[in-house]
Length: 124
Image 1 (cartoon, rainbow, N blue to C red):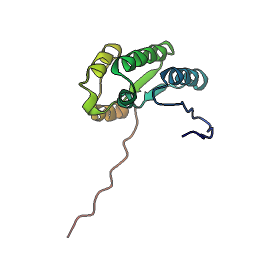
Image 2 (cartoon, rainbow, N blue to C red):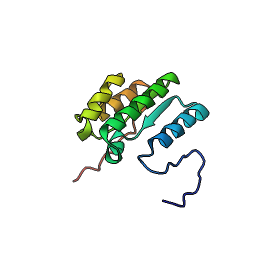
Image 3 (cartoon, helix red, strand yellow):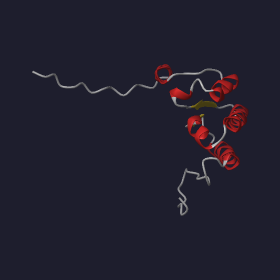
Image 4 (cartoon, rainbow, N blue to C red):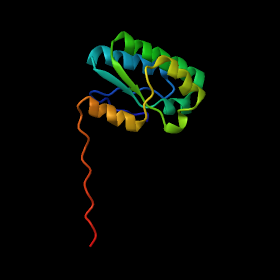
């Protein structure tokens, strides 16, 4: 969109493949907001707009910045992209890969309570 209105707590970049601008925006947000963790959604989207080698370099650089700030980070990708060379290459720079089910279990270990499922009424 060309006529974007500024919003609090939100940063817009020119395009999904404006990786330098995105990197600067993330660095600035980390410095200003001092978050406990970073959630990056998603590597799969970057792979649509940019070549895999560039994405790997970008994410590797981002991981370095996040580690330097001593933060936890979660990078998401589509399950179907898990076996792509780019995602496998990024495995060298992360502590662990988690599936969504394992991520949910991790949240529970951290003390988050899952949202209870509503039971369907039984048919007579």
